[in-house]
Image 1: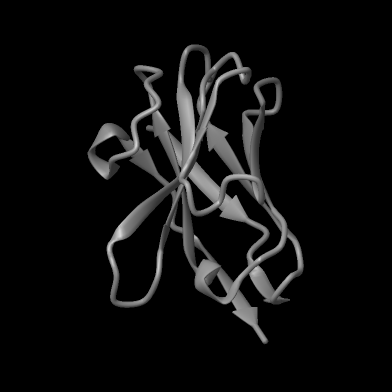
Image 2 (image 1 turned 45 degrees about the vertical axis):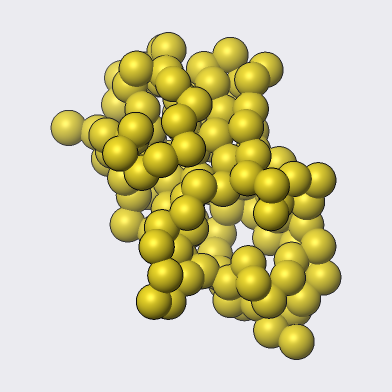
Length: 124
């Protein structure tokens, strides 16, 4: 059973930065892709960013391009989301997800495994 555990959420002022981490408990992340989604209160869960096994291939939602950076450390079974220039609208619960098939889907249904989420709050 794969488990994903997120960390790094918290309260940050608008314009500030925060880095989220996700640790996957599985023997290897070979050929998997990993992603971050977010869900604001009362809204659907939206795609934020995804990264392929090779780490050279990434995909971002338009709303975070140029501000967020996804990266991964396959040796440590971790994926990160570096968030800069945070805006009020970035506030949400952020979820880590894993696709064993290695795709870079932008839909919730593409991912088989999910973490419990970590709250990001952005204040003025």
